[in-house]
Image (cartoon, rainbow, N blue to C red; front, side, top):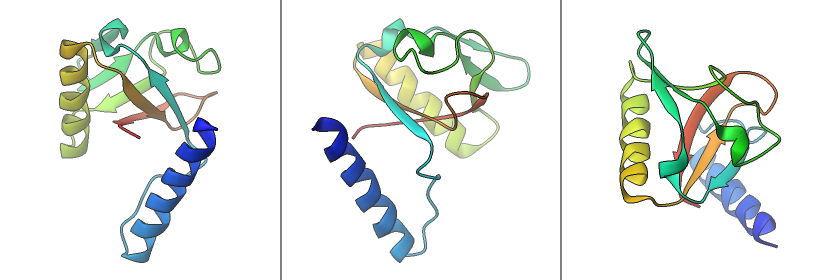
Amino acid sequence: MQARRRTRRILGFALGCAGIGVSVPALADYWFHVPDASQLKYIVDSDSKVYLRNLNQFDSTVLGCCYNYSIDLTTAQGQAIWATLLAKIETQQGIWIFIGSQTAPSYVYVGDL
């Protein structure tokens, strides 16, 4: 039931944004919840990316360690995502993780649904 509501909210948001000309990531991408963001493991690499290392501990359908899911810190959007994630880590709050693919290395977004 909760997954259905989440899907409706995502679709409603995407359709609303599309109606006003705002681009949104493809809906084929994948969301899952991390109940305590402080349990996330990450590295910041010399290529200005943050790699989340243990997402498979929170959802077994996503790829495991090490350089599969990244946040690009060279963009304003990436910096905002990283700041949001750090705030959730510091306060040990839950967060929704959005990845581009469950089966191939991809990008990461975060949010609250």
